[in-house]
Image (cartoon, rainbow over all chains, first blue to last red; front, side):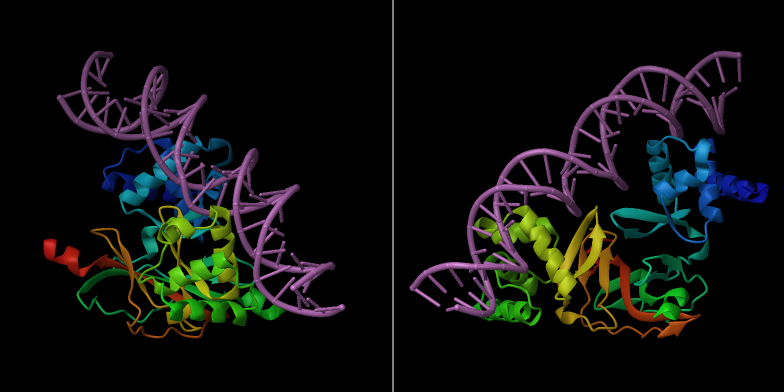
Amino acid sequence: MSPATRCKAETLLTEAALRRTPPRIAVLQVLLNAREPLNQDQITARLDRDAPNKVTVYRTLQALCAAGIVHRAFVQKRTWYFESAERCTEHQCHPHFTCTGCGRTSCLAEMRLPAVARSYKGYTIQRQRVQLEGLCPKCRECK
Amino acid sequence: MSPATRCKAETLLTEAALRRTPPRIAVLQVLLNAREPLNQDQITARLDRDAPNKVTVYRTLQALCAAGIVHRAFVQKRTWYFESAERCTEHQCHPHFTCTGCGRTSCLAEMRLPAVARSYKGYTIQRQRVQLEGLCPKCRECK
DNA sequence: ACACTAAATGCAACTGAGTTGCAAGAAGAA
DNA sequence: TTCTTCTTGCAACTCAGTTGCATTTAGTGT
C-alpha cells in the first residue's frame, strides 16, 4: 500500500471528522486502490493478516458510507459491494456494468451518461444511479 | 382480484410453459395488480388466508423471474422487491424512485429516459436500469 | 374417466451476511 | 499525562433466503 494512498485516506478521515484509527485507514486504503467495487470479504482478504475483526470492518464501512467517503455500489448475491466515492459526482454515480456471461461487475467510470431531468411530476431528483447489463469484451469474443 | 387479472396471469404462465398452479396464479395476480414493487412478505400479506407456504412463494418468484414474467426490481433492507415485467421494454426497465425523506420507492413507469449507447469500449450493453433518488411530492411539501 | 410421470408444494431444518450489546481498549482534547 | 468519548473485539442473535426430502398435483396419454 503506497504512502500516498495512506495519506489520502487519513486526510479523508480528518475532513469527515472521523478518528484516524488503524482499521479505518486500512479499509479506506483498500477501497481507494480498488479498481472495482468490493464486498466485505474481499476487503478483509486484501488486508490479510492486518485485517480487523469482521464487525469492525462492518461498522467502518457504515461510518465511511455515512460520511459520504464510500458508496454502497450495488448488491450481488445478497452482499453489498462498496467503492470509494472519488469518481462520483454529487448528482450521479458512474455506471456499473454487469456481464451476463461471466457475472462480473465493473465500473465504467469515464462513461458519459445523458443527464436525467432534475424534476418530474412533482418529484425532485437529486441523484441517479445507472446499472448496465450485457457482455464484457472478453465474453463477447467467446460467443 | 378481478377475473381479467386471473385470466391474464394464466395466459402468462401458459406462454412461459409453466404449470398453472394455484400458488403461481395467486402470486402473479398480486404482482399484476400492484402499483409498486413488492417484497415476499408484502405479497404473502396480500394473499392473506390463501397464501401458500413461504418456500412456495419463494420458488414461485424464482420461476417467474427465470421466465421473464417478473423482475427483481431492487433490494431494500436486505430484501428483494419484485414487479411484473409488463411495463419494461427489453432494453430498459422503467426507473425506480426512492425518496430520501420517507424511504418509499415507487415506479416512474411513464418517465422517458434518454437512451444509453448500445456499446462502449468493447462492452455490449443490452439492458439498463436506472435508480433515482430525491424527494417525493409529499416530502417536498413538508420541507 | 383413469393412470402415469414429471413437476410443484409444504415442512423442517440450515445458511450466512448483517446486526446488536457490552466490556475492554485507544484516539484526541485539555 | 489524565480524562472523556469514541472505537474495537467478542459472542451471540436475526432473519431473508435456501436446501432436502417426502407428499401432492398438473398436465399428458390411455
